[in-house]
Structure formats: structure tokens, C-alpha cells
Image 1 (cartoon, rainbow, N blue to C red):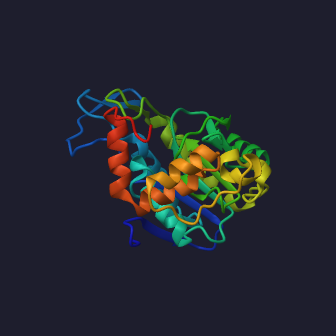
Image 2 (cartoon, rainbow, N blue to C red):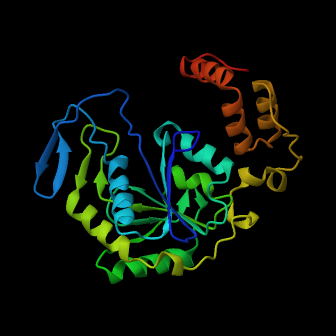
Length: 275
């Protein structure tokens, strides 16, 4: 376990980081009463199921049992804003990795190519991975509609970062269900994939592959003066100039949690913040 609460295990020599998160979206500790109907598991409707991301953990444990080479990381705090993976990325946990693979996507068809509108893995990588899974009976396809999960924490340094569907639906709700048969098929196929043989094509440092807010100086004119903001007024000023960087906001949140919480509280309560 690292200093942030993430659990890490390395098997063999590999340039692949496999990940899942150990938290769920529930706000309190509640007994989950599972209901099984055919191939599907759900709950009695009183709680979420937590297949997001317990089912991802199932995949990782199956790979570990089969001694598939890789760096395995079980992250904390994904549902609270990628807390564990953000800190781990800053600590260099993915140094030297070619790919980060998370099994944390709803449905049964997706290999995520973009998150938050930003490309996270190349077409070469995605198409090769689609082909690998097809060899073992699992039909997947590229999906550019990814959101904001643990693999996103590494797209600025690791060439190929993706999430893969594992068969859950209606996550974060009391209607959440898991297709257990698909989860089993995904687990078995993932053991057989040639992870180290997948192409590495995306350049994580390429301006062309990243959105404007990552390179505000290039897209919005005046050069940002960001050297570590200490108050909200600095952020507001940069926003007015059009040079505010998203990573600067993230740094501010981590370094000034109390002021960030007060600002968010005011916004949620409808207070007119800074005009």
C-alpha cells in the first residue's frame, strides 16, 4: 500500500499498468442485498450494487491469479475525483509505462479512445486491442465518449490510456445491474490478450492531440502567468484573460481545500461569486 491508500502489485516485467478502483459511489455504509435473475445481478432496490468498480477488481484479481505480467493498482477515491490516481501519477507510479488499462466502463462494447473530449489512446492501439479481444470471442469497438476516470490521470505521460466495458449498467443508481456472463467472458479473454505486443503510437506530449485548455498559451493569446495560484481572485483573473489552465485549477483544489470548498458551497447555494 502506498501513502495514499492505493494497493500495488507487480508481476514480471511489463510496461502495462492495469487498474481498477476500490471505492463505490454510495455515500454511506449499507448492506447490499443482491438479487440474481439469470445472468444478471442487481439489488433489492435499496442500494447501489457497486459493480462500478467491484467488477473491475474481479478482472484484476483474475489476471493476477493467472500471473499475467503487469503493474496492478487498486486506486482509492475515483468516485470522489480520481484522488488516488491523481496522487499516484504525481508520484511517478506510471513512469516507463506504455499503457494504462482500466476496466471501468458500462456496457459491453467499449474501448475508450477519448476522455473529456481529449484523445487518450491511438487508433492503432485501439484497433489492435479490438482484434485481440475478437480472437477470443469478445466483440468491442472504439468509443470516443469517455468521461473522467482513473486512466485520465495518466494521459499527459503514458501514450496509451483506455477504459474497457465490463458489463454493468445504470451505475451510481439503485437500478445498477451486472451481466455476470459478460464479466466472465471479459475476464477469460483478458488473460489471453497480448498486452505487451500492442502498438504504442500516441504521443502524450503532442499539442495537436490535446484540447485548447491544456495549451492555453498557444490558443488564447496572452501567456498565462501560472506559477501556483494562492487565491480565487488569481483564478478569476486568468479566466477573464482566457488563459486559465485546467491543471492549475486542479493544483489549486489540492493545495487550498478549505477555500475551494467555500467557493463551491457559495456556488451551490446560489451566491453571486465575484460578480
